[in-house]
Image 1 (cartoon, rainbow, N blue to C red):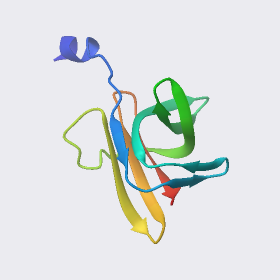
Image 2: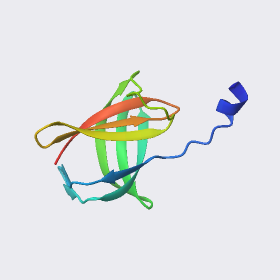
Image 3: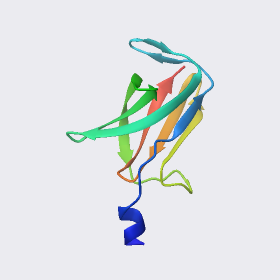
Image 4: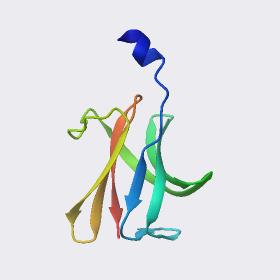
Length: 102
């Protein structure tokens, strides 16, 4: 098991965004996005990317919760309030979540 995990190549999950997301820089349109979690200086960010471009950066909260995912690398999104989505991210390095406004 250790060899499997040590040789595991991290793949980034894809998110199908079905509603536009509001950000301070504008709006992220509907579409498919590669999701990359970044942990730097103790702060966690979830980035939405298309090709090699980061189109959105969201401050996130690191958690031990795996959100009942059967996968190691995952992204989930669910509505939590009017115009608010919860973005849940998991990887070999950490799990995190962020709230997005649409």
